[in-house]
Image (cartoon, rainbow, N blue to C red; front, side, top):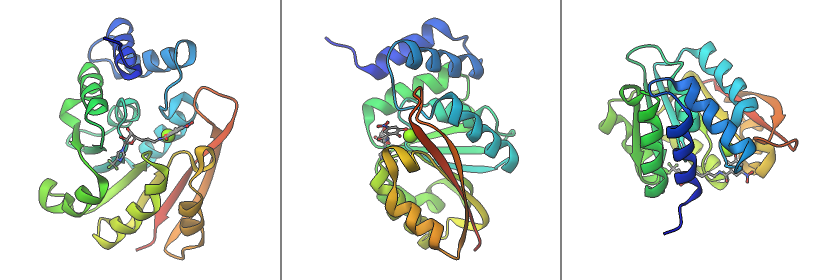
Length: 214
Ligand SMILES: O=C(NC/C=C/[C@H]1O[C@@H](n2cnc(C(F)(F)F)c2)[C@H](O)[C@@H]1O)c1cc([N+](=O)[O-])cc(O)c1O
Ligand SMILES: [Mg+2]
């Protein structure tokens, strides 16, 4: 049977990274995607911007929308203080199965809760299911047409507090025009664009960091 790209990415991690060493897992995936097969991880260039935002916030509660193979999950979780929690949502069970193994290889299972399903189903249940009051950081990297509806849903469900940070990948490529329009024109957010490049390419892309004003 043919292997899938996520399976080949996991194989590269298990072959080239050291168990329990998140940095080596991140490097193994970046090397694989740069030299073997491109994959839609946030990547090393935008990943450094992600790292700086995570380190600045030092969040206790993080939500990631779009786990895929777990690359940004590992990038974020490796920087979290003890007892901090990262909940990552993944819709595709095959991707989730790969991501669980990548997260385990990095030795970060304790800090990560991978939840399978749709954002529309899970966002309203975050408080009751996981004892979350509000998220300090949300990383949006899932289907680009879901960024806006899910942001509105998080607002409605009271999951954002004054100072909560939304960090959105791909606001240029593939692009999230309705989300950008909303977040940049809303008086309830202070937004800033971090110009970068689409992972492993020279194409422009960037991250939009938006602070909720409550
Ligand atoms: O399409 C892109 N990303 C879509 C990413 C989608 C990923 O998010 C999951 N998801 C869907 N709903 C949920 C929720 F919320 F329910 F959990 C999670 C999907 O199953 C998939 O693994 C993309 C494309 C390019 N590109 O260059 O084409 C570059 C990138 O960085 C990208 O992120
Ligand atoms: Mg992305």
